[in-house]
Amino acid sequence: MAQPHQAQPFPFDALAWCQQITQTHSQTFYRGSLLYPKGQREAVWAVYAACRIGDDIADDLGPHSAGAQLELDRWWAQVQAAFAGHAGEGQMQRALAWAVSRYPVPLTAFAELYEGFCMDLRGTTYHTLADLELYCRRVAGVVGFMIAPIGGYRGGEDTLGAALALGQAMQLTNILRDVGEDLRLGRLYLPRELLEQFGVRLSDLQAGRVTPEYRALLEHLCGLTRELYAQGRTGIPLLSGRAKFGVAVAARLYAGILDELERGGYDNLNGRAVVSGRRKLWLTLRELDVQFGHPQYCPLHWAGQQYQRLKA
Image (cartoon, rainbow, N blue to C red; front, top):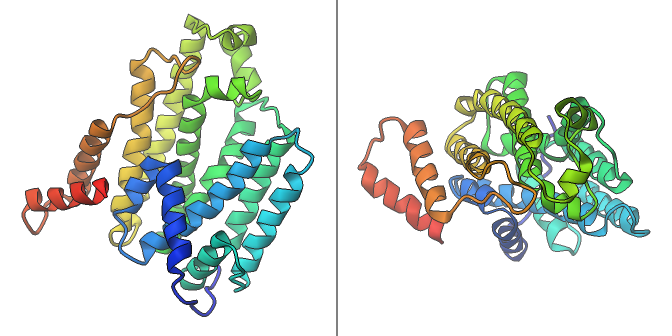
């Protein structure tokens, strides 16, 4: 595990920027992060923002942009500089340099993330489920390796393996939610061998036709994703302090997207499965009730505090 450098001064403006990035791009992840204590919470935002900026380069510029790889390489150089203790001038690098000086976030996880973004820029075709699982590991699974050291954990490699599975489950959830949107951008993450196995035609997907064969494929993939969630949840009790609550809530809310996808008849070609704000609040309180067990103080008072925090 990487050792943090000498702690850097708290970069208030850079971390406020990271908070805004996190809140804007992932309400689900943001709600989970609010349950971390101060200090850890800001480090989680710094890591998320760094990941988000790299992801935006790969998504927005895409494989047909001549400058995309150059921009991504510049992002990777800034990440490496942050790990070397150089805060630089940019908000992302300053925030990340502070976070990794305080917590033992591994640079190797960012290296895998960089390789995952390069896969996007190459326009990788996913022939097998193993191909897709590798992609999900690189662009999301390794985020578990980044977040776990911030909150602390016990259980060694078993806990990190669970964190990896949870990150992969969340990325697969995103992919299953966004099939139609990705198709309109010229991307298809569904493995070709599974399309053939279930008799799904690309022309039907492009036309927005949700066929029985396609529903069967999505039911299969949702089942695999839920298995990854189950594997990932085995590591939650091994997380330290309030980190377990943040991760548990994020997992519950992401899995809620699968519930909405199923309720909508697996139509992810003509719209997105969205978990309403009211349902997110209900799922959050339900998960905290499961995780908290028997609170040492009034649960209604505590629930009210969490509600106000989530509204903020």
